[in-house]
Amino acid sequence: METVVESLCCREVSAFWSLVEELTPRPADVTCLTQHPGFEACCLNPFVLKIAYTHFRQDRGPLQASTHEQYRYTAYRQAIRWAYGVLGRSIRKPLPSCVVSTIRQQFQNGDQTYQGFQWPCLDENE
Ligand SMILES: [Zn+2]
Image (tube, rainbow, N blue to C red; front, top):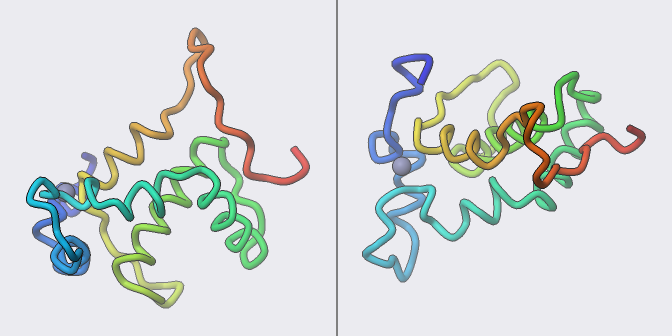
């Protein structure tokens, strides 16, 4: 992780950990927010992220970034929205490292030799 702030575990940030604690019934094997059933649904599901990106794009314009970066950025925003609700535009909150690394793993930058699955572009006309 690049920063000390980003090295936080989800257990150390009450806004994130309370999402796990409020899970009812809470399975004993859910020991990290990334194991919460809502995490895949809200932060990793490409269909959900496409809708979330459409909201972002309508409000702020297209994000000048690669497709994978758009997915990652949108997924980070989803995680923040899930944990904190509505924040002012100038308010930044750190993401737990487990959340960042799981999102990065899901939406890796493709390298030149990798011919596997390509996530569809989030911008409509590209
Ligand atoms: Zn965690």
